[in-house]
Image (tube, rainbow, N blue to C red; front, side):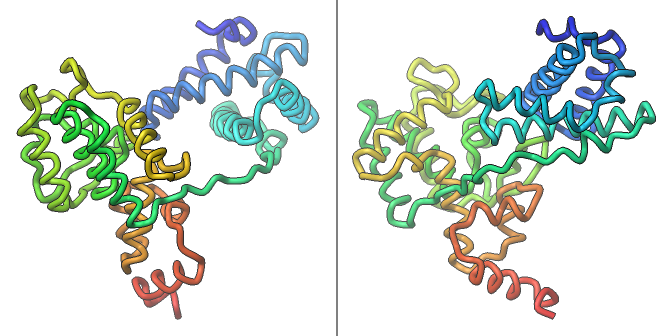
Length: 312
């Protein structure tokens, strides 16, 4: 286990374990997220132990002052941690500290009032409608094996036509075929949603399964690698990288950009934000807004049309 455990007391390590279990069980956090939380909080506690020259226990952590927080943030920036990553770490630390303060009964203001570093948020860049269509057509030309070409077209069509995350598309199993009119998708944090399957996506998957030399077995992924193992995201990322170079598209034309494009093109066609939010599986409407490449006036126009009370 991480050497940072050596700088914190047994009671603190037990508290951190309990908090991580809380994130897992009650908050529905994915394992990768839990691992990131653990790394962030351990790094913080390790710094505070060294900063104060003592093991970090439940008593000392309650005494952390705003000056200690500034020292930690300065230390992180000094070792090259980017503002975005530091903001994420601070968020994890605040969440843990808020939970611990409530459990142990101490005042958490010094930590919770620490300001997050400012950084420029990267807005997703969707493709234009013709570029998205051209991407699907060009992906088909990259593979020497016809079944692999059909596979790549099917995956990219699911990303663009149904707004799936690449992990969700690659997670489809033999139990999901033939594709129904509506797919039940288990997304981030165990959040379930229903996604309509457009005819083009159903046709692309059917064509792939017809050509694929491996059977679509129940419980097994339908999308296979060359030797029959599960298909990994890297393969689709690679084929899209080849395609975007041929099309002269920017490096932002990634698998996730196809999902962005799905949301933006739906909104441009008059879809309302709430419906698109549900299709994407976003917990927050603000996340859905970030996925859309339309101006604020257009957003408000669509929002008001979908929710008349907002205009009143």
